[in-house]
Amino acid sequence: MTNIDPKPPLLRINVAIFVGLPLAALLLVPAWGIYRGFDTAQWLWALAFLYLNGMSITGGYHRLWAHKAYEASPALKWLFAFWGAGALQNSILVWASDHRRHHRHVDDNELDPYSAGRGLWFSHMGWMLREYRCNEPDFSNARDLERDPIVVWQHRHYVPLTVFMNLGLPLLLGVWLGDIIGTVLLVGLLRLVVNHHVTFFINSLAHFWGSRPYTESNSARDNGFLAFLTYGEGYHNFHHIFQADYRNGIRWWQWDPTKWMISACARLGLASNLNRVPDFRIQRALLDTEFDRARAKLAKAQDSESLRQMLEREYQEFTESINQWTALQALRYERRKEQLGGVLGEKKLHLQQKWEHAALRTRLKELEYSLKMQRKRLGLLMQQLQLQAQPA
Ligand SMILES: [Zn+2]
Ligand SMILES: [Zn+2]
Image (tube, rainbow, N blue to C red; front, side, top):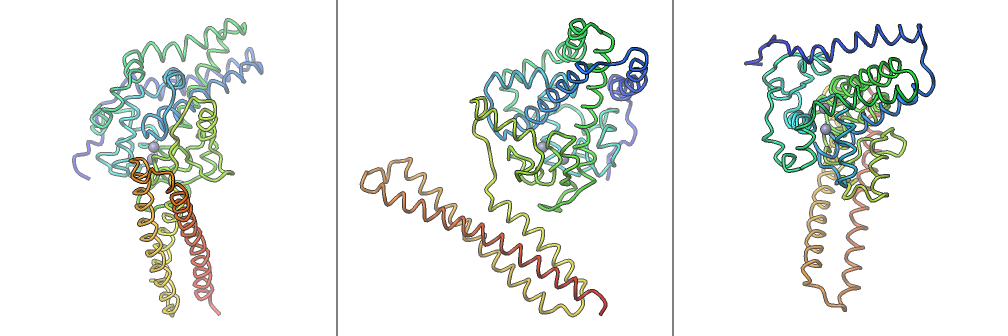
């Protein structure tokens, strides 16, 4: 890559935050633990702060503001703005603007602010320690956020806000719990450092470690273990292809507390318009990736002409399903527009409309099911290829 300055000047404040604070935590927290000890209430408060900070970043900064995956009431936005500031990861405006650049230019070492292509250390923390060019503030991709009064207010008052959330609040809590130093160390310092690193894992480890079921066009990975540490953001391969979906873990058994929080908020009337990618598009992405993998394997295999033909037949069927689905979706969209425009608004057409709508839905479901079955057949095909590859 050209024009990349390998060692621009260090950002002293960031070095103090990202290197100084973890070192202080490593020394002071165990020392106080040995000298005085921490009680259960302090640990529980630290955990509560950790989740409030973490989920304000994942549910607020990330899914709400950076991706607009749903809409939130002002009360919820204020909550995210305060507790997100407490995560000490810059203001919503800076964070979301950087993150939109990350998605748009993922893995581009010049334009992605935390490109995984520049290594694990750079994407985890290194990018924040120096004055890298890709890191210069540029809000041209966040004009919508500049119109959000809560975002603007938080950006203007970010420094006093983050000092209050990280120092003032733990201090007050310490007065109440009767141990100021211990509470500031545990709920203030250790919680902050832990939350920093688990969030940074999404930019670093989640681009290096895990599987890529939905797309291999970028380095993002799905990793259940990382999802557990990152409030559900570990399904990063899914997220990079379907960034506008409010979910990252789409299966019921996948750990995604941020998704659960958003749907709970929707039930309480605090969130609305939750964006979900249609299942068909998810199946399509899975199958597309599997076809690519199967082709690559078959290209290397010997005596696999019949399997190759089968694969191409499957691929043809796949393309036809996609075309049909796209046409049906367009038809559905047309119908809805007509209904809204009152073209078919007469009462006697009501039953006809309902019937058409149901027929369309059934057909779309059938197509979705046909992709699922295709994935099964593709699996069998691959097993066959594996058997052929084994020595007799
Ligand atoms: Zn990413
Ligand atoms: Zn994202």
